[in-house]
Image (cartoon, rainbow, N blue to C red; front, side, top):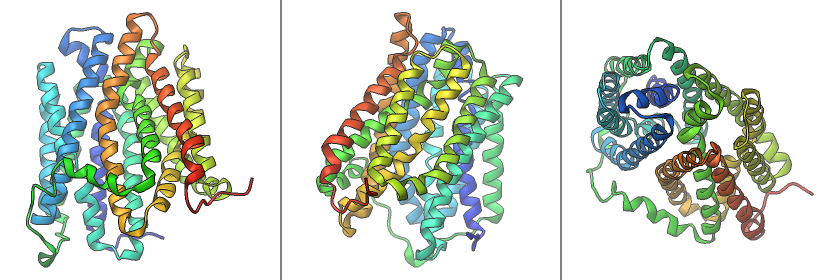
Length: 407
């Protein structure tokens, strides 16, 4: 059973949790807020939200390695505390944003201040024995999953008190966490383990170098990138699609996102391990991608709320894809390049968070222009199907050391 051997661990996990809640808490009310501030309709607001998410992701892409390297130089405590303080002040600013320009500025600052995964993970590595780090790092994923459930649900509930209320709640949570860090978070990085800060180590281009060490993993990396692009259809367009196609308000959108988070947590926590063990990684990936591609295609034509909930349940099996992908990739490179490979995968995730919203929000808006509010999901289905084709027919037959179950 996992226990906290150092009080720094739950405080660092709280930073990840609050960062995720802060991202999700505004999703249900974002369509209404953008239409109010920009004096535009939902179709135009969809495009604006896509640009806004791109700004957020770009700032996280730049800030992530910078904050990680700064924490190696100055310690984890000041970086985490400063990030949470800026996070709180920024969300308070967005609560009073008078124009879309101010909202864009707020999302940019939130993207930079919220890139706390590196420092939080470093806290866990500092205080956890090597043989227990795998389980401890899993707590970060758990914190992210809980935040994705709590954030949208809380945003939907608070939206009843006005579109600014969720921002105020996010600001309060971040400031409380910063105060907790000030009084309770010990520094976990020893002085002898600190190193000088170097821009070369934190440079954006350096994030892509590990991809060149992955060898014959390149086709699978391409499939994963296409899959990640398709998966961005949810954070980038769900709130707008649900409002346009289903007529849902902020509360209904929040509950739907919470439902997705709960069923995904159930699948990932209860089914993924047994399924991969029983059927193998290849079949788990293929099944997960088929369920997602099917759901994406059917979402494009859904017209009722109950249909959306059925499709959310079907698409939950896509939770098999990410851990199975990790297992395959880890066997395609030698032990010396495991870290390089994971770093490259992280870089692709950031790029997909930048390109995905641009592609998918524009697809939704263009579809609405032509009387079809489902083009975003059709594009996601196309991307997921392309990834499935690569995985099923082009890559896995050449993967060394398969751990597949008997046919």
